[in-house]
Image 1 (cartoon, rainbow, N blue to C red):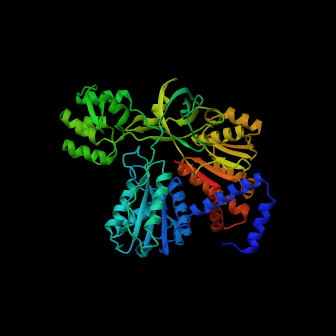
Image 2 (spheres, one colour):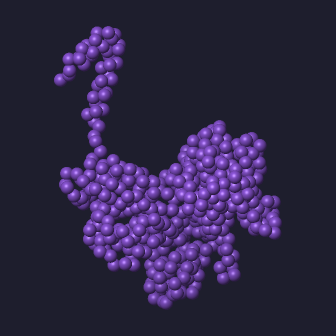
Image 3 (cartoon, one colour):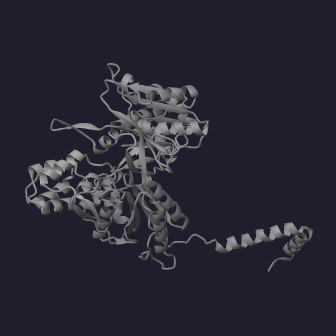
Length: 560
């Protein structure tokens, strides 16, 4: 069982050891043997090649797909990992094994990066009889068309003759456990003992669902000064036990204005206190319209359903329920109940959290601009921004925390550059508070911009104080309307180009938050120019440099 030389050394060790040392050696060897007995090698798959693709806006699908790729490589499979925006769609007919991770955005739409693939499979009659595939769909159950993009892709591939490796798996915002179980099922499906993939169905671990907090308004203050064209509120909520990290967002389901509800009920002639069964729960009509159902800016598909109920020709248009009913009225209460059944739930709105728990225990802060716009000459407001900015002190607010693993601070010794004009400042207020409270020694550089210095410099006093304290190393601001020529944050980046590039070369992490278009696009063009000029690179090399920052997690965006 053991060589004589080894046995001799073991006997010598035992004879020279005290009783306590022998007890320790016994425990150590027992643990070592147990660990080896439990350990199992990674199952080896006979599938030689497999493609993993992802469609994402926030980065979650990419992170999951990358993890899948790493695990599959360990099983001996050659993996090709690509974003759907980079995937060559004509290769689809050549694929044998394909895993897709895709999120859903807007009104059941695929993310921008997946639209080319989505449109290609829906507009072409392909023969995919050799393809074996599986789809992991990411979504949010608070939205009416939960995981719709994933559903569409899964169904279309099946229609084109492809074979499912696993049934479609839908993930809510707490997707970690479900996605890990799904990958485990994939590995079992690609079973080495079968000689080929076989379809099996193993139930995934159920997600816990969102944790709903009930907070109360502490402060609700307009940050803009007199004469501003904007109304941006700093809102503070108290909420015992709330948990979040800088970079996360807050999900709020707004309530419809009471005046609008009264107008709808009066138009129909329905008693607001009358009970109605909705999704196996009983509500009064008033509470249902107030807290549960979307009655503003109805999507075209809902308007189409409404037209069938009232049996009238209605053009494809987005419209409030009240205006729709005024122009195309229901004939009685029974028909109104049919309309109620087709209405979508109110969808939550996400807002970047503007605070750190290390600075404000049991609190969460938001920076919200009231969204105002004109419809047929009448000024209107966004539902959620109007709801939140009008809340009074101590008013209750229900919310949940939306984790964002793709927008997180680096280690405390790393430098960071933050670019956040307008309400894009919100997560960076949280970043600065976190780093200041934890004593981080990395440098912090902030680029901020808005229309006017006098009326639109959000958190001006705080920023100046942090600069004096050293929590902010440098601040560059751009106020576009304070001079004849408009100046934006991208112009400030170009002006400080050499120093900016030196920070990047020294390992700084770069963050952008705010409007996706045109701000984030213009900022990215400025970054390319800075890298070209001060990195002495051509445009292709500069883009490659920026892509490398993304791959390393050193260039992160939270844009909307």
